[in-house]
Image 1 (cartoon, one colour):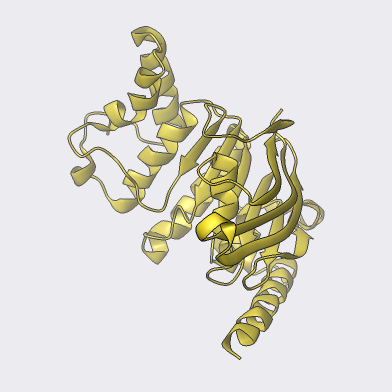
Image 2 (cartoon, rainbow, N blue to C red; image 1 turned 45 degrees about the horizontal axis):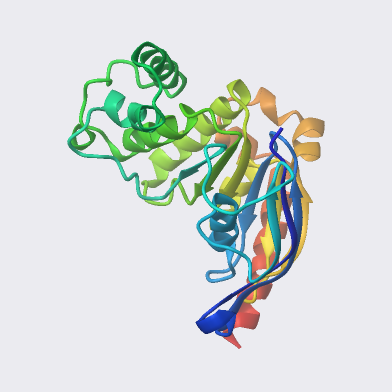
Length: 265
């Protein structure tokens, strides 16, 4: 199991935590194998939440736990996918995917088996020997996601993973991520500015206030998706035409617009 909990989390930046207040009163539980997306105005602390789960940042007050254990640093049960692909240009697709396994001391035969499985999962067959510069942006991000999945983490942390992609490639990757999440579910914390992306991908969407970031609302998308049988639709544009999808997209946009308006005053 991989349950993420934020308990009374507060985060300040600056000398001895006395600078600006980024997050306040964050209480949230993410269930095992649940996909949760966080949306909110720029600077509201979305990425800081993810970085605290990853063990890159720590709360000024409160605790962040994974499976009942307080996060004190990075760990093998968590993997991160960033907006920038961060691939090694001198390594092939297979070598980039295998890097974490090699660093963990996984034996060659097991390493090759798991890389093959990750390549198949991400639809990278035929590109194993290619170098990053020979791949499109979407293909490079597939490699980055495969590199995370191959480690078999309990928790997958994704920080605007499709933000650097063009609109068409981004849509394709969203559909791919849905497919992967069904075949190989993980507990996912997904940070995004894109409302449609959050509604399409997530089981629940967390809306943050402007800074200092607080949880304004948590929306249960999974129950709507199940009731409306979104899963029978193969393409994202078919789902986006559904009345239930339009309703929640509009609701979230209006909520975010309220925060933006308050920020600008």
